[in-house]
Image 1 (cartoon, rainbow, N blue to C red):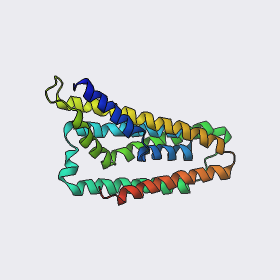
Image 2: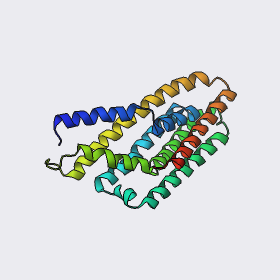
Image 3: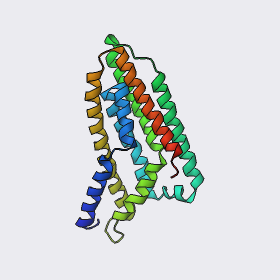
Length: 211
């Protein structure tokens, strides 16, 4: 593996990237605000697992396809943006879930829905693939005992775990805030619409970004 100084720089840089507010944090926060803390945690798990698709792609060199074929990058980016916007509109217009008797069942169902959606959102985010492709090779040592692909996979896993830790922190904070605010059906509906609006904004931002 790379020398200690390089690894230290890797961990410090990753921590900065992870804990600076970004799209994944906003996405997990939106799911938490709209659906509750359990859904936010499941969304974070979905983002985390979806991130391994990009880690594996980086280790295999597949992410380089986005550089070689700009039209492929554009197609995946637009598909991911449309999916985010669709999720946001659906969340914005959704009816409030029934309360008391089936609340636990609804919470679990909502959590699994957030998980499935989040895996798809992360896999369809080509900017994550480009981030891994640009960031990880800087900390790889070609002369190390471990092959380059394995170093990329290990470093990518560390990055993914650290980013997820930041998402979880946001979910817990947003969950505590949302719990205090959910005192009426009107407030709950407002939070749900706020979450949907954030998702639509993230989708539009992804679609309009030039790179």
